[in-house]
Every structure is written in C-alpha cells, then in structure tokens.
Figure (cartoon, rainbow, N blue to C red):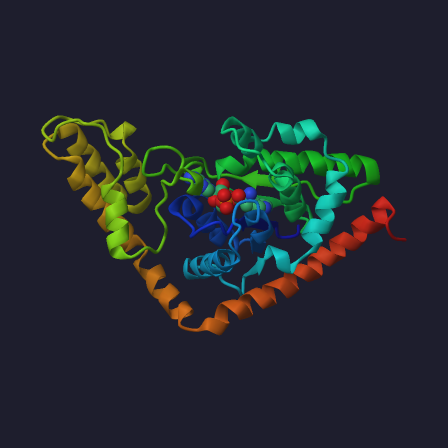
Length: 324
Ligand code: TYM
C-alpha cells in the first residue's frame, strides 16, 4: 500500500482565522505525518475577490507564515503557491469541457452571490472546476477541509468519474476528510466564521485587537444574576477549542449557576486563545525575521509540486488526444 497523497488549499483573501485553523490547517499539519502532503496557497482563486495586487502579495506571504508558524514542516509537506504551477489552470480547461453548467449553477458560492443580487464573474462561477483541477492534478486521495468545501469535493469526484469513463482511468477519485466536531467553527456572531461575514478571529492579531474582538462577541441580554444556557453560546463553543475539558466544564457550570456576566466569560476565552497561540506566535516572529525563508520554502515547494503536476498533465494530454 502506498502512503496516501493528501492535498488541500487555502485562499489568501485575508489573514487566516481560527475557522481555517481548526477546520483545515491543524488537520493538514497532522496529516503531514501520515502520507505525502501537498498544501497550497490558492492565489488564482483569490483573484475572484481580491483586486489589489499589493494586498494579494501581502496575504500570500501572511498565509505562508501562519501555516509554517503553526507547524507545517517543509521537510514533511510541500507548501507552494498555486500560480507557481500553471498546470492547475491548464487542467481546469480540460475539465471545464466536461462540466455540465447545471452542476455549477447548483454550487453554493455562486448561489450566495445571486441571492445577494451581485453579478458573479465567470471566474467565480467556474471556481469549483479549478478546485477540481487543484486536487486531480496531484492524484490526491485525501482532501482535509471544513464542511463548506464538501460540495466542491463532490464536484471533483463527479468530474473525475466522468473523465475516467470517457478517457480511461486517468484520475484518482479523492475523498474529503472532515472532522465532525470541527466541521463548522462559529464566528463572533454565532454564524459560520467567515471572512465574508466579517466575524473572524485571526490567529495572530495584536493583543489589544484580539481582546476587543472577543469582548465584542454577540450575546443575548440575560442579566448577570440569571442562569445562562451554555449549549447555545458561541463563547462556550469557542472556549471548547482552546481550553482543557476541566476548564470548559467549569465554564458550563458557571453558565448554569447564574451570577457571572458574559463579560467575565469572554475574558476567560480571551486568556485561553492568547495562551493557546503563544508558541506559534513566537515561532512566527522568528520566521518573519528571516525574509528569505518563506521565499525559499515556496520556491522549493513550487518545484516539487510542479514536477508531479507536469507528470499527471502529460498523462492527461495524451489521454484526451492533445499529444501522442
Ligand atoms: P478557504 O480559504 O475559504 O478556507 C480554507 C479552509 O478552511 C476551512 N474553513 C472552515 N472550517 C471550519 N469552520 C469554519 N468556520 C471555516 N472557515 C473556513 C475551509 O473549509 C477550507 O478547508 N476553495 C477553498 C480553497 C481551495 C481548496 C482547493 C481546498 C482551492 N482549491 C483544493 C482543498 C482542495 C477555500 O475557499 O477555502
């Protein structure tokens, strides 16, 4: 048995947040011990929403630094920038030619756009096809993602089956790996944490910024003295990610007992988040002090990923009749 090939990506549309961390980055870092892991910064994808070139460069660098600071080990996993491997877009075109329009019309990013009465670009509409190419071009078996990406992995599987039926077994059919308890991390307002909802907690903000964000978590107007329901609170849901079980239990008991205000619970949450990321924060500062380091990692990653992508692409070009 070959070790599994693992692939995942993250869009540089801002600084990574704790939804990204628990939903994808941490599981991805764990997977690097168990197979051949490929993780990329999806800058082609970010172009559907980031139109400021300086910002895009800054976000790409920030994502790389955060991922490395959190434990991605370039000796174990390949970290690269999507646009350094242009075979992704080449394969996306070939897949596009077999993608039924209704399949994309059914995808939620496109439907959300329409619901908000925004005009989607063709790039946004076709985004799941590029994502399928990102995965299929590495013969990936496993795709660690949060729940919001499940539909896109389903599209990828459908396209792989369709291409295999038409041209012979050219693609490995991948599976999403979604950790049930971490499938959807809530944001400051209780909805799914997402850059587009403006409810995120980034991994490495200034202490003051983090405190302000956490103190701003939306709560109901239950008075201090009244009992509160821990099950429906996003403070407790977030605390569970950061604090040991005994501390979580204590918070739940204090919720039910009454006599403690939400402000106090938020302070506990702030302390837990700040402490949780302390080692990674120190590591990030070290990495940032060496400006050539990230460039070196990404250059090396581009080479390693590019070699595999080109090999798969040669197989596919031949199978579809573009080459002998
Ligand atoms: P992106 O950049 O939106 O998010 C990166 C990863 O973080 C997960 N995530 C969450 N998980 C749990 N709770 C949340 N609140 C939360 N918010 C985000 C996402 O599920 C994702 O796994 N299309 C992808 C990027 C991509 C990709 C790929 C992923 C492009 N090509 C190929 C895998 C394979 C995206 O927009 O992720």
